[in-house]
Amino acid sequence: QVQLVESGGGLVQAGGSLRLSCAASGRSFSGYGMGWFRQAPGKEREFVAAISWSGGSIYYADSVKGRFTISRDSAKNTVHLQMNSLNPEDTAVYYCAARAIPAVTSTRDSYDYWGQGTQVTVSS
Image (cartoon, rainbow, N blue to C red):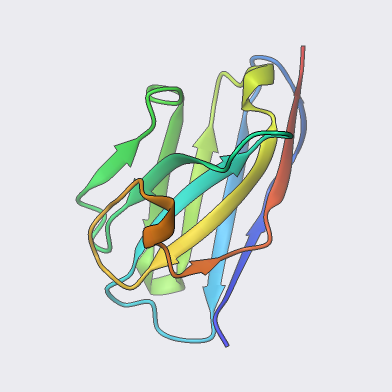
């Protein structure tokens, strides 16, 4: 059984930082691309960032470029999302996702596995 478990969410003031982590288990994720998505109340789940299996390709949504950094430790099957300069518009449930293809993509339907999500709330 494949499991993705997110952690690191919480409440932070505008301008603050949080670091999300995603731990993958249940199988080898060798060759898997990983991504982060988020969903705010009343909105569709949207792409945030993605990283290839090798870590050599990284892609960000324009709304987070320059503020968020995605990274991965393939040996430990973990992915991180460092979020800086947070603003209230970043408030959402953040989801980790994995796809059985090494390349990056922002397409939600291309991901095969999803975590349960972690809440991020940014107060003004």
